[in-house]
Length: 106
Figure 1: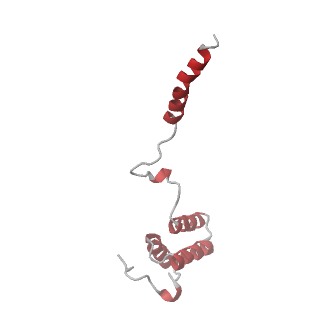
Figure 2: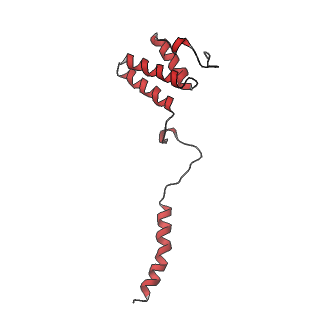
Figure 3: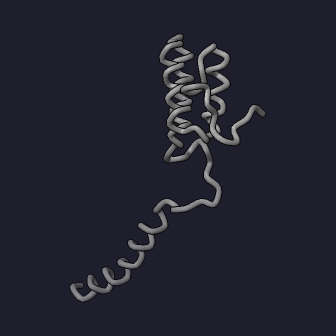
């Protein structure tokens, strides 16, 4: 019986490795589902924060967050949306009303 145990171990070793690899998650997908992303663009996160302030009725925090977004990430698509929101709030979009180059109204 003692001589059978090393043979069983030798046969089960590759099966254990195969089972471990087969259960591992796939590493890369060609198209990332936005609901399962691991990170956000910083300007997107700031815009989301401003939306939460808006939902809570904190207009000052919303405007400050939108203004920071525009100052920090002026060429972001979320900066364009933030400028529109600031204009709707009656707030200036960026210091001096400056816009990023090529960021006209569309």
